[in-house]
Length: 332
Ligand code: RAM
Image (cartoon, rainbow, N blue to C red):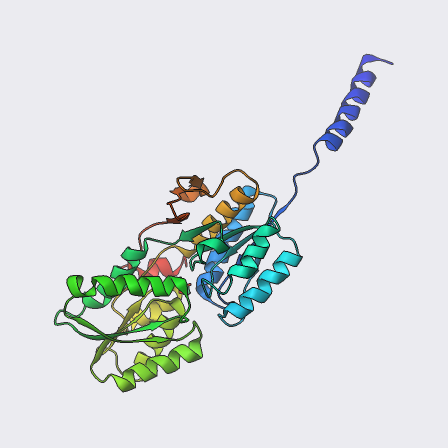
């Protein structure tokens, strides 16, 4: 056998050997479970999740959620994901407690479980990723109203579902600082639109009917804030009631343009979904561990550190108004 031929056979043999010894890396399946489908905020997060999957490689995203933002709907989905033996579940929860048994079951089967956006109780997840500091979001939503009410006045909250841990924690945090930070603002009611456009519209109308002196509606939900601004627009109340809260610029730009709202805030939902997947992957593959003090890489977004409760927070909320909403509306 001449030397070239010999080399070729050896290389071929080595290649076969390598294929046997190094099987292709198994695909990691990460389920991004959201409060409900059809919500633009979660669609943006899912886009970020896909970005992370592409960047990491060998990752499959299962973007799923119930049609209505209920715990029951999410429990069914979690059970189906357990049966499918996914590698990780990253969930924005509709209820911090009701999901715990199903998520515990998932973890006992070796599935990585994290919550993001809206958390589950500590025993139901390995860690929780907050979009931003809870106290800061709480004071921001009231500041957004107070900034445009120099003489103070009545405001009301139109929230998501009554069991959503994220909105509830923001509202609680905001209420605590209200007397000292915004003494002229009077919170007269908190109602729940369940991140459902129809229910949110009805609740906004109800607030207006029962509080004739209402000066602002604060909706810390991207679904509620659009519904409230539409109601104020349709009822000819622009200039009388300022709608504010947490809004997705692409959905909300029209209400900054028409004056139903002076300003709103949010964080980058694409980065949030990206980070949830990045972290889920690191935990599922054993690259990182969810424990107090752990530094978790979130790719191009940076790094977060877990606190004693295995929770962490991303960037500060960002304000949108006439000066910048056009620019951001093209991104998310
Ligand atoms: C809605 C959801 C979500 C929340 C945003 C601000 O889309 O309730 O959980 O983070 O609003």
